Image (cartoon, rainbow, N blue to C red; front, side, top):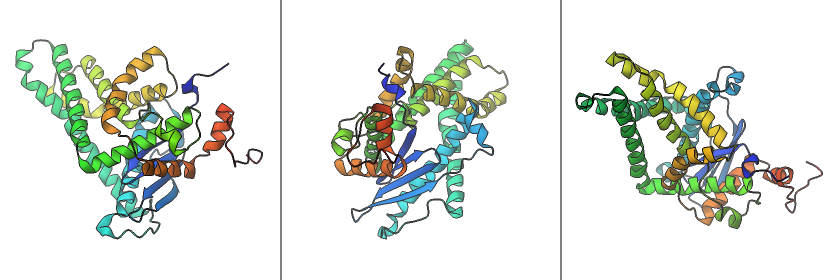
Length: 319
């Protein structure tokens, strides 16, 4: 019996960095960066989860909280690592430390500041803006819906604004290359530049889709969760962020493994937003993405086990 295409879950994910790609497979991750010289620098490291106990990463709804924090920390760390090759035009191809003590501290501080900014922009600002029209709206439910609409509009406008930035456009091209590599493998095609180029640049497990689900879930929760005290209403929008992240993670996790009509409808807005946060990459960017995948994931063995496809030059008996 043939399996649904979403049954071929690879388990790998990643993100775009400055002139490169980070790919993660379980605890191991690679960062491939195109240096100013044209060479590709590859670093391979292991990431230790922020969760104090590993079992927390396996408990539904709880795991999403720590996965979200891990993604922010690792994303910041690898982005800073890739940028280090371009600081003061002193890139010389030397392998740098992607997870030193100083780098970890900087990553945590950056994540805290980023989270604070995100809370102010996407959680509190929509609430305060909705309060200006509260005097003309008699229904608390309608006020909550208006707050949700404002939150969605701010999120979309934010994506439109950053997608127009010149430097961000190249990052989004690498983002497209990352998606194309994963889609190429999960469609049963060997990782070649031609195969990757013709694959889709949209993927259901994308961080853009996750952020949309965060916004969407927050809208639904705040319609039903009511408190009279204004201070508690503000506090609720901050304190419920872990709950929102946990629910959103379970939704996107389900979306990455199933393909029924309900999931397709639910995933559609996030996939549409990915047209803003991904761009078509060139062949050199695809090459970087392939190198990043190859460093951390046995994609040839994956294609053989999942699709029965044998790639020339691979020792299957050894595997």
